[in-house]
Length: 124
Image (cartoon, rainbow, N blue to C red; front, side, top):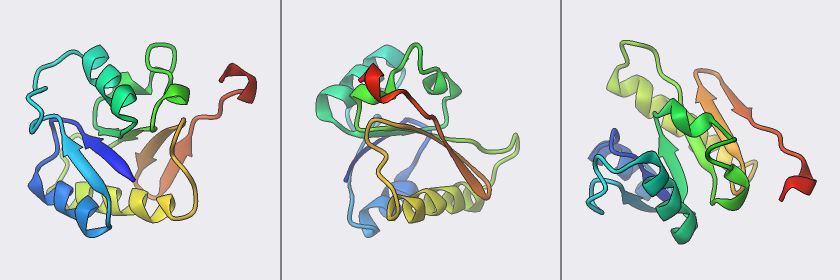
């Protein structure tokens, strides 16, 4: 699957995705650091890449409709996150991805659960 990691993810996170066999690009590699959320969203749509982000703004489905994307995944971490906690949430997401498709959906990944935003099929 094709992913784009937002600017808050580093090489170790990229490696987790690549070791799982995924095609991963980063906002950092593509010179999009500091770009507007709309610009990142549009780029992901054009490339049909699932966006992986810590930015809660992307959970606003009225601004960033997941239905026309490769998917949007918001990773929710505590105020004082550790690298191991972040990596654990990424692995949790990748494990769930084996059971379900993220394309066209918004997933909120939290410790021990993933919330999937439900949309009307007619909205597509």
